[in-house]
Length: 215
Length: 404
Image 1 (cartoon, helix red, strand yellow):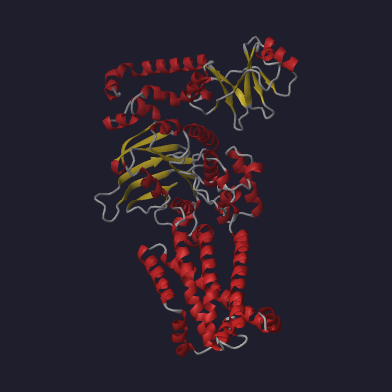
Image 2 (tube, chains in turn purple, green):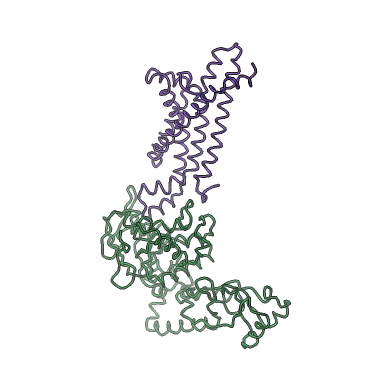
């Protein structure tokens, strides 16, 4: 059976897997973004806390993904929970690091001006600092998404959702007629999704970065 | 919040009095206080300039007035009300604040920047829109052109104007300015200073201005505070008095050489008398221009563009020589001064141009008149005579204070 025949025969299953893969990554990226930005807001003003946050999230990233999921299974069980937790933890680093860099990069004179004209601390953060730090934060989210696309494949190990199932099935039946097709379909599907998401982020950037600071 | 949230002076000026009482600032770990026991009374509606060498604590003193820096001792009263303990966010909304390099938010348009404080004060939408137009007009920027621009598409001088418009948008009785013109080129700085003088002439707010440039202080101030290290007051007086009677060596050293020349900063073009000069518009037909030139009895006539701004000087003979085209005839107007320009700026312009006169312009760059070198010299004479009459009895004392 050729690769194209395989795709034609299995397209229903593949589309479902791709949909679930994208859904899982997107949701985890959203959670990682919210958490990451909150962590950055809590730590960027102190040199000590900021580097602690960056180092902690970087350390998380060094845990091999298979091991991370393996460690989570006895605690939270199989399926969706270990996948979501692992992906969210991995997604934190780029967001936290870029948000800290972005918030620290805001011109102190502007923060001073914001204070001087009577903006409260929350107003300063929401109306001045975060909008100005948004381009690097968005870059962080983009990197995070691409990373999670690949890592999400491992979720199949814990009976999680996504295109990883295709890859694992192929690997498990190496030598059989469809093994290569399965691995190939899963991998290419992930690459394709990653490219689609990236295009999506370009659009999001266009829509959300104010014209005055767009490069 | 009510519209007139700011305290108002009883003197009829829309400005407020500011009193600093034994104000000091100590930083933990610092060798001594960086501001040591400053007591200062600022009248409603006057412009007070704090001037001193860098690191003398003048900026710190200014920032304590809107409590960007919390004082470690003493109090601040604005129109008699002690503001040392009130919510700083509320205080700052009633105190305009303009800083070096404008501090405009790059992700907001000019209009959004100006509207910030009125929005925080909860003004109705239509009133904010009108106010933004009004402020742009006030600082000499065309609302239609600049309303939706982002700050990065403005020149340094334009940014600074918008910065001042933002600081004044909510009509605060007090305006604090921290070296606002420090980062622009000298020509733009001159124009911005003139602009500020004109604004203040119209608005009569209480302005506290910080600079390290003594010439700027002389030009802008009603009264100058010369500060030495730790923000100790060396002298607090009118520019005139500081130039003629410096309190001590520190002050006279700071005033620097050419104190006599610097007094030219004290007189404005509006005070010396502006003369008229025959003008024609670019749209006038050539024969009419020739008639005006010959009928005026003068050598020169000023050509204005469609918006009434001086464009070229035309002399007899220019029109025939250049084939009769108004676009190329004569010499272009290179420099103009406003009514608020100082005598020194006017003299500079007159001497640079080489033909002994400079055009005076109004708020939007439109023609208002001409000053010539004779008028300027006459007022220098008057200045010197008045001086001689005043200082004769105490010449010895004054002589000592003057820089060698």
